[in-house]
Image 1 (cartoon, rainbow, N blue to C red):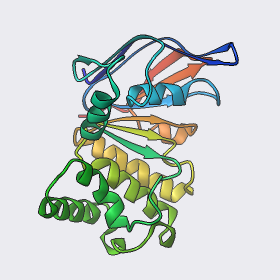
Image 2: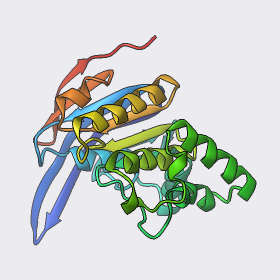
Image 3: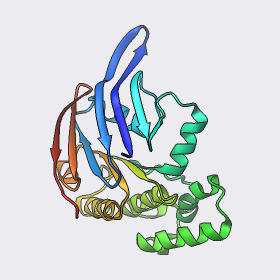
Length: 229
């Protein structure tokens, strides 16, 4: 078991008014799974992804990651787990405009204190694989949205994470570029990387093995889709 949520609740308080974002969520993700999370706006998808990515803590319940209870771990431990085991892909790409594509992808390895020679090797290989090596010295605003998303995926993968969390990864792309990104995520998943994706797109969700539907902060349905070898 890679990740498990047990009776997870998340409540936000604002001016004395409590809002329940997640209510009694029980969910597990195995190593090598591709899971899509769907639901209307405001149903709790982003809150769930933030808890799964150790960016936020549940109000109640337990989060178990790589066999370790991490629900109330301190910020240093959670940051360590994120850096070493989790990659994030966002709808808005979140590339740093002042850095080249190469430098954006290299950045996580610098935080991990990987040697310069190893960084060069790994970034070069990954950019070749994702067909953006020819854009190495370009800045984000100089390349297409599809290429920016490929760079964002490369940045998420460069530390060789166990889990990729993707938040609407095709949301800002046309259908052709969106299909390319989904096929890339499927390829990575088939090589053993777990993927959890939040999406409004039923077309994108069809690429996953399981589709989880949320409504009003609760898991309402779960469907098995693609089956891998």
